[in-house]
Amino acid sequence: MAPRDDSATLPPNQALASPHKWPLVGEHAPRPSPAPWSLTIDGLVDHPRTWSLAELRALPQRDFTTDIHCVTRWSKLGMRFSGLPLADLLAACGPVPAARFASFTARSARDHSTSLPLADALELGAFIAFTANGAELAVKHGGPMRTIVPGRYFYKSLKWLERIELLPQDRLGWWEDHAGYHNNADPVYEQRYVSRQHDRRAIMAMIQRRDLSGQDLLGLQAPGISLGGLNAVGALLRDADFRGALLNAANFTQANLSNAHFDRADLRDASFRDADLEGSSFLGADLRGTDFSGASLFGATFCPEPAETEAKPARHDHTTRFQPDQLEALTERQINFLTSRL
Ligand SMILES: Nc1nc2c(c(=O)[nH]1)N[C@H]1C(S)=C(S)[C@@H](COP(=O)(O)O)O[C@H]1N2
Ligand SMILES: [Mo]
Image (cartoon, rainbow, N blue to C red; front, side):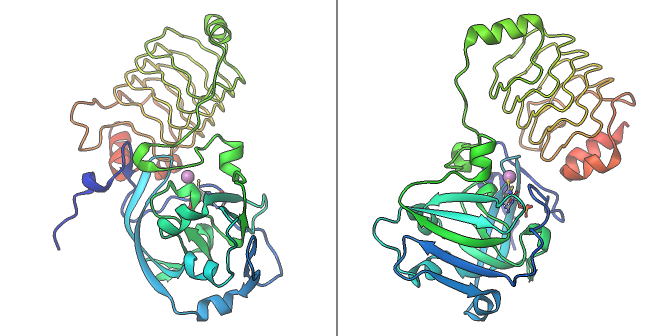
Protein backbone atom coordinates (compact mmCIF):
# COMPACT_ATOMS: atom_id res chain seq x y z
CA MET A 1 0.00 0.00 0.00
CA ALA A 2 1.33 3.45 -0.88
CA PRO A 3 2.02 5.60 2.20
CA ARG A 4 -0.66 8.22 2.59
CA ASP A 5 0.24 11.85 2.19
CA ASP A 6 -0.64 13.12 5.63
CA SER A 7 0.00 16.76 4.79
CA ALA A 8 -2.84 16.52 2.27
CA THR A 9 -5.29 15.29 4.92
CA LEU A 10 -4.21 17.21 8.01
CA PRO A 11 -6.22 20.39 8.63
CA PRO A 12 -4.21 23.56 9.36
CA ASN A 13 -2.09 23.57 12.52
CA GLN A 14 -2.79 19.95 13.46
CA ALA A 15 -0.04 17.37 14.12
CA LEU A 16 -0.27 13.60 14.18
CA ALA A 17 -0.43 11.96 17.60
CA SER A 18 2.12 9.15 18.03
CA PRO A 19 0.87 6.16 16.03
CA HIS A 20 0.13 4.00 19.07
CA LYS A 21 -1.22 6.72 21.29
CA TRP A 22 -4.77 7.93 21.52
CA PRO A 23 -4.71 10.87 23.94
CA LEU A 24 -7.40 10.99 26.60
CA VAL A 25 -9.12 14.38 26.68
CA GLY A 26 -11.85 15.78 28.92
CA GLU A 27 -13.64 13.49 31.34
CA HIS A 28 -11.91 10.19 32.11
CA ALA A 29 -14.86 8.00 33.12
CA PRO A 30 -18.66 7.89 33.04
CA ARG A 31 -20.82 8.54 36.11
CA PRO A 32 -21.05 5.30 38.11
CA SER A 33 -24.61 3.97 37.91
CA PRO A 34 -26.34 0.69 38.64
CA ALA A 35 -28.71 1.26 35.69
CA PRO A 36 -27.92 -0.72 32.56
CA TRP A 37 -26.70 1.33 29.59
CA SER A 38 -29.38 2.59 27.23
CA LEU A 39 -29.90 5.25 24.59
CA THR A 40 -32.98 7.50 24.48
CA ILE A 41 -33.98 9.65 21.51
CA ASP A 42 -36.70 12.15 22.38
CA GLY A 43 -37.72 15.79 21.98
CA LEU A 44 -39.18 16.77 18.62
CA VAL A 45 -39.87 13.24 17.33
CA ASP A 46 -43.13 11.41 16.62
CA HIS A 47 -41.98 8.27 18.45
CA PRO A 48 -39.59 8.85 21.36
CA ARG A 49 -37.69 5.67 21.97
CA THR A 50 -35.23 3.98 24.32
CA TRP A 51 -32.95 1.14 23.24
CA SER A 52 -30.98 -1.06 25.60
CA LEU A 53 -27.31 -1.48 24.79
CA ALA A 54 -28.01 -5.11 23.85
CA GLU A 55 -30.73 -4.04 21.42
CA LEU A 56 -28.39 -1.57 19.76
CA ARG A 57 -25.62 -4.14 19.49
CA ALA A 58 -28.05 -6.62 17.90
CA LEU A 59 -28.77 -4.22 15.01
CA PRO A 60 -26.66 -4.73 11.85
CA GLN A 61 -23.37 -2.92 12.51
CA ARG A 62 -21.52 -0.89 9.92
CA ASP A 63 -17.82 -0.10 9.51
CA PHE A 64 -16.62 3.50 9.38
CA THR A 65 -13.16 4.94 8.71
CA THR A 66 -12.58 8.53 9.70
CA ASP A 67 -9.94 11.01 10.86
CA ILE A 68 -10.18 12.60 14.28
CA HIS A 69 -8.92 16.09 15.02
CA CYS A 70 -8.74 17.37 18.59
CA VAL A 71 -8.92 21.13 19.08
CA THR A 72 -5.69 20.84 21.10
CA ARG A 73 -3.96 20.13 17.76
CA TRP A 74 -3.42 16.37 17.67
CA SER A 75 -4.98 14.28 14.93
CA LYS A 76 -5.30 10.57 14.20
CA LEU A 77 -5.95 9.60 10.61
CA GLY A 78 -7.86 6.59 9.32
CA MET A 79 -9.39 5.46 12.64
CA ARG A 80 -11.65 2.43 12.15
CA PHE A 81 -14.92 2.24 14.05
CA SER A 82 -18.02 0.09 13.92
CA GLY A 83 -21.52 0.98 14.99
CA LEU A 84 -24.74 2.53 13.78
CA PRO A 85 -25.41 5.55 11.57
CA LEU A 86 -27.17 8.24 13.58
CA ALA A 87 -29.48 8.79 10.59
CA ASP A 88 -30.97 5.29 10.96
CA LEU A 89 -31.74 5.68 14.67
CA LEU A 90 -33.23 9.13 14.14
CA ALA A 91 -35.35 7.89 11.24
CA ALA A 92 -36.78 5.22 13.53
CA CYS A 93 -38.12 8.00 15.79
CA GLY A 94 -39.64 10.22 13.09
CA PRO A 95 -38.19 13.70 13.62
CA VAL A 96 -40.88 16.36 13.18
CA PRO A 97 -40.21 19.21 10.69
CA ALA A 98 -39.55 21.72 13.50
CA ALA A 99 -36.58 19.63 14.72
CA ARG A 100 -33.48 21.63 13.79
CA PHE A 101 -30.82 20.70 16.36
CA ALA A 102 -29.62 17.56 18.10
CA SER A 103 -28.37 17.81 21.69
CA PHE A 104 -26.26 14.85 22.90
CA THR A 105 -25.98 14.12 26.62
CA ALA A 106 -23.53 11.81 28.38
CA ARG A 107 -23.86 9.65 31.46
CA SER A 108 -21.15 11.61 33.26
CA ALA A 109 -20.71 13.50 36.50
CA ARG A 110 -21.33 16.85 34.83
CA ASP A 111 -23.97 15.54 32.38
CA HIS A 112 -21.55 16.47 29.64
CA SER A 113 -23.20 17.54 26.41
CA THR A 114 -22.62 18.84 22.92
CA SER A 115 -24.91 19.74 20.03
CA LEU A 116 -25.10 19.90 16.24
CA PRO A 117 -27.52 21.27 13.69
CA LEU A 118 -29.54 18.23 12.66
CA ALA A 119 -28.75 18.83 8.97
CA ASP A 120 -24.99 18.85 9.73
CA ALA A 121 -25.19 15.67 11.80
CA LEU A 122 -26.80 13.88 8.85
CA GLU A 123 -24.65 15.44 6.15
CA LEU A 124 -21.41 14.70 8.01
CA GLY A 125 -22.45 11.09 8.56
CA ALA A 126 -22.37 11.17 12.36
CA PHE A 127 -22.54 7.70 13.92
CA ILE A 128 -22.59 5.85 17.21
CA ALA A 129 -19.49 3.74 17.79
CA PHE A 130 -19.17 0.59 19.90
CA THR A 131 -15.73 -0.49 18.68
CA ALA A 132 -12.52 1.31 17.67
CA ASN A 133 -9.72 -0.23 15.61
CA GLY A 134 -11.18 -3.71 16.00
CA ALA A 135 -11.68 -3.74 19.80
CA GLU A 136 -14.49 -2.77 22.14
CA LEU A 137 -14.35 0.97 22.71
CA ALA A 138 -12.35 1.49 25.93
CA VAL A 139 -14.35 3.04 28.76
CA LYS A 140 -12.00 6.04 28.97
CA HIS A 141 -12.65 6.69 25.26
CA GLY A 142 -16.42 6.64 25.69
CA GLY A 143 -17.25 2.92 25.94
CA PRO A 144 -19.68 1.31 25.74
CA MET A 145 -20.94 3.88 23.21
CA ARG A 146 -20.03 7.33 21.95
CA THR A 147 -20.83 9.49 18.99
CA ILE A 148 -18.28 10.16 16.26
CA VAL A 149 -18.80 13.24 14.11
CA PRO A 150 -16.49 13.24 11.06
CA GLY A 151 -15.41 16.68 9.87
CA ARG A 152 -15.69 18.44 13.22
CA TYR A 153 -13.20 18.93 16.05
CA PHE A 154 -13.41 15.93 18.36
CA TYR A 155 -15.24 17.83 21.12
CA LYS A 156 -18.39 17.36 19.04
CA SER A 157 -17.98 13.57 19.53
CA LEU A 158 -19.59 12.68 22.86
CA LYS A 159 -18.32 9.91 25.15
CA TRP A 160 -20.82 7.73 27.12
CA LEU A 161 -23.82 8.68 25.02
CA GLU A 162 -27.13 8.29 26.87
CA ARG A 163 -29.58 10.69 25.27
CA ILE A 164 -30.20 12.53 22.00
CA GLU A 165 -32.81 15.26 22.17
CA LEU A 166 -34.12 16.97 19.03
CA LEU A 167 -34.76 20.67 19.55
CA PRO A 168 -36.18 23.63 17.63
CA GLN A 169 -33.28 25.81 18.79
CA ASP A 170 -29.68 25.13 19.68
CA ARG A 171 -28.58 24.37 23.23
CA LEU A 172 -24.83 24.99 23.67
CA GLY A 173 -22.78 22.04 24.85
CA TRP A 174 -20.49 21.96 27.85
CA TRP A 175 -17.21 23.02 26.18
CA GLU A 176 -19.02 25.45 23.91
CA ASP A 177 -20.74 27.09 26.88
CA HIS A 178 -18.05 26.91 29.58
CA ALA A 179 -14.83 27.15 27.63
CA GLY A 180 -15.55 29.34 24.62
CA TYR A 181 -15.15 26.48 22.12
CA HIS A 182 -16.47 27.40 18.70
CA ASN A 183 -19.96 26.01 18.14
CA ASN A 184 -19.31 25.08 14.51
CA ALA A 185 -15.94 23.37 15.14
CA ASP A 186 -14.88 22.90 11.52
CA PRO A 187 -11.14 22.05 11.52
CA VAL A 188 -10.69 23.11 7.89
CA TYR A 189 -11.48 26.69 8.92
CA GLU A 190 -9.82 26.36 12.35
CA GLN A 191 -13.03 27.16 14.18
CA ARG A 192 -11.47 26.46 17.56
CA TYR A 193 -12.48 29.24 19.95
CA VAL A 194 -14.79 32.21 19.89
CA SER A 195 -12.91 35.43 20.46
CA ARG A 196 -14.32 37.98 22.77
CA GLN A 197 -14.49 41.76 22.59
CA HIS A 198 -12.13 43.48 24.99
CA ASP A 199 -11.88 47.04 26.11
CA ARG A 200 -8.51 48.00 24.62
CA ARG A 201 -7.74 50.65 27.22
CA ALA A 202 -8.37 48.29 30.12
CA ILE A 203 -6.05 45.76 28.53
CA MET A 204 -3.33 48.36 27.96
CA ALA A 205 -3.55 49.36 31.64
CA MET A 206 -3.15 45.74 32.76
CA ILE A 207 -0.17 45.32 30.46
CA GLN A 208 1.44 48.49 31.78
CA ARG A 209 1.03 47.19 35.34
CA ARG A 210 2.37 43.82 34.14
CA ASP A 211 -0.49 42.18 35.96
CA LEU A 212 -2.90 39.93 34.09
CA SER A 213 -3.54 37.64 37.06
CA GLY A 214 -6.96 36.04 37.07
CA GLN A 215 -8.11 37.97 33.98
CA ASP A 216 -10.11 36.48 31.11
CA LEU A 217 -8.19 37.64 28.04
CA LEU A 218 -8.91 35.00 25.44
CA GLY A 219 -7.13 35.77 22.17
CA LEU A 220 -4.94 38.54 23.68
CA GLN A 221 -2.69 40.06 21.02
CA ALA A 222 0.71 40.84 22.53
CA PRO A 223 3.35 39.93 19.94
CA GLY A 224 6.80 41.37 20.50
CA ILE A 225 5.75 43.11 23.70
CA SER A 226 8.16 43.61 26.61
CA LEU A 227 6.65 42.03 29.72
CA GLY A 228 9.53 40.70 31.79
CA GLY A 229 8.36 39.63 35.27
CA LEU A 230 4.71 39.61 34.17
CA ASN A 231 2.21 38.27 36.73
CA ALA A 232 -0.29 36.13 34.81
CA VAL A 233 -1.17 33.67 37.58
CA GLY A 234 -4.46 31.94 36.77
CA ALA A 235 -5.12 34.13 33.73
CA LEU A 236 -7.33 32.83 30.91
CA LEU A 237 -5.19 33.35 27.84
CA ARG A 238 -6.35 30.75 25.34
CA ASP A 239 -5.17 31.53 21.81
CA ALA A 240 -3.07 34.45 23.09
CA ASP A 241 -0.32 35.70 20.80
CA PHE A 242 2.99 36.26 22.60
CA ARG A 243 5.19 35.66 19.55
CA GLY A 244 8.61 37.23 20.02
CA ALA A 245 7.61 38.75 23.37
CA LEU A 246 10.06 39.32 26.23
CA LEU A 247 8.62 37.29 29.07
CA ASN A 248 11.65 36.38 31.15
CA ALA A 249 10.67 35.44 34.73
CA ALA A 250 6.98 35.81 33.83
CA ASN A 251 4.65 33.86 36.11
CA PHE A 252 1.98 31.85 34.25
CA THR A 253 1.24 29.47 37.15
CA GLN A 254 -2.16 27.78 36.61
CA ALA A 255 -2.92 29.97 33.61
CA ASN A 256 -5.03 28.60 30.77
CA LEU A 257 -2.82 29.00 27.72
CA SER A 258 -4.21 26.38 25.38
CA ASN A 259 -3.31 27.11 21.77
CA ALA A 260 -1.27 30.15 22.83
CA HIS A 261 1.66 31.21 20.65
CA PHE A 262 5.05 31.69 22.32
CA ASP A 263 7.17 31.29 19.20
CA ARG A 264 10.54 33.08 19.49
CA ALA A 265 9.55 34.48 22.91
CA ASP A 266 12.16 34.96 25.62
CA LEU A 267 10.83 32.76 28.43
CA ARG A 268 13.99 32.36 30.48
CA ASP A 269 13.11 31.58 34.11
CA ALA A 270 9.39 31.88 33.39
CA SER A 271 7.00 29.58 35.27
CA PHE A 272 4.23 27.53 33.64
CA ARG A 273 3.57 25.45 36.75
CA ASP A 274 0.22 23.59 36.50
CA ALA A 275 -0.72 25.68 33.48
CA ASP A 276 -2.84 24.39 30.61
CA LEU A 277 -0.56 24.51 27.57
CA GLU A 278 -2.52 22.17 25.30
CA GLY A 279 -1.83 22.96 21.67
CA SER A 280 0.53 25.83 22.50
CA SER A 281 3.59 26.59 20.41
CA PHE A 282 7.16 27.34 21.53
CA LEU A 283 9.11 27.21 18.25
CA GLY A 284 12.33 29.16 18.56
CA ALA A 285 11.51 30.24 22.14
CA ASP A 286 14.24 30.49 24.78
CA LEU A 287 13.31 28.02 27.51
CA ARG A 288 16.39 28.04 29.68
CA GLY A 289 15.33 28.00 33.32
CA THR A 290 11.67 27.71 32.33
CA ASP A 291 9.52 25.61 34.67
CA PHE A 292 6.86 23.41 33.06
CA SER A 293 6.19 21.23 36.15
CA GLY A 294 2.63 19.97 36.26
CA ALA A 295 1.60 21.74 33.05
CA SER A 296 -0.71 19.94 30.64
CA LEU A 297 1.08 19.58 27.32
CA PHE A 298 -1.25 17.76 24.92
CA GLY A 299 -0.40 18.82 21.40
CA ALA A 300 2.20 21.40 22.40
CA THR A 301 4.98 22.10 19.90
CA PHE A 302 8.65 22.67 20.76
CA CYS A 303 10.37 21.66 17.52
CA PRO A 304 9.10 21.98 13.94
CA GLU A 305 7.17 19.15 12.38
CA PRO A 306 8.69 17.99 9.05
CA ALA A 307 6.47 20.27 6.95
CA GLU A 308 7.50 23.44 8.82
CA THR A 309 10.86 23.98 7.15
CA GLU A 310 11.40 27.58 8.20
CA ALA A 311 10.69 27.27 11.89
CA LYS A 312 13.44 26.83 14.49
CA PRO A 313 13.26 24.54 17.51
CA ALA A 314 13.02 25.95 21.03
CA ARG A 315 16.22 26.39 23.00
CA HIS A 316 16.23 24.19 26.12
CA ASP A 317 18.81 22.65 28.42
CA HIS A 318 19.13 20.93 31.82
CA THR A 319 17.65 23.99 33.54
CA THR A 320 14.36 23.59 31.63
CA ARG A 321 12.06 21.72 34.01
CA PHE A 322 9.61 18.95 32.97
CA GLN A 323 8.39 15.80 34.70
CA PRO A 324 8.75 12.63 32.60
CA ASP A 325 5.03 11.72 32.71
CA GLN A 326 4.09 15.13 31.29
CA LEU A 327 5.85 14.36 28.04
CA GLU A 328 3.58 11.39 27.28
CA ALA A 329 0.96 13.76 25.89
CA LEU A 330 3.32 14.88 23.13
CA THR A 331 4.08 13.44 19.71
CA GLU A 332 7.07 11.11 19.38
CA ARG A 333 8.98 13.83 17.55
CA GLN A 334 8.40 16.37 20.33
CA ILE A 335 9.34 13.86 23.03
CA ASN A 336 12.60 12.98 21.26
CA PHE A 337 13.44 16.63 20.90
CA LEU A 338 12.77 17.51 24.54
CA THR A 339 14.53 14.48 26.00
CA SER A 340 17.57 14.89 23.76
CA ARG A 341 19.18 17.53 25.91
CA LEU A 342 17.50 17.20 29.28
N1 LIG B 1 -18.67 12.86 27.92
C1 LIG B 1 -17.66 13.57 27.40
N2 LIG B 1 -17.43 13.51 26.08
C2 LIG B 1 -16.41 14.21 25.54
C3 LIG B 1 -15.56 15.03 26.33
C4 LIG B 1 -15.83 15.06 27.72
O1 LIG B 1 -15.13 15.75 28.50
N3 LIG B 1 -16.87 14.32 28.22
N4 LIG B 1 -14.52 15.74 25.76
C5 LIG B 1 -14.54 15.94 24.30
C6 LIG B 1 -13.23 16.29 23.77
S1 LIG B 1 -12.71 17.88 24.00
C7 LIG B 1 -12.49 15.44 23.02
S2 LIG B 1 -11.06 15.94 22.24
C8 LIG B 1 -12.86 14.02 22.90
C9 LIG B 1 -11.75 13.20 23.48
O2 LIG B 1 -12.02 11.84 23.33
P1 LIG B 1 -10.93 10.80 23.81
O3 LIG B 1 -10.67 11.05 25.27
O4 LIG B 1 -11.50 9.47 23.50
O5 LIG B 1 -9.68 11.09 22.99
O6 LIG B 1 -14.06 13.70 23.59
C10 LIG B 1 -15.05 14.70 23.55
N5 LIG B 1 -16.21 14.15 24.21
MO1 LIG C 1 -10.87 18.23 22.40
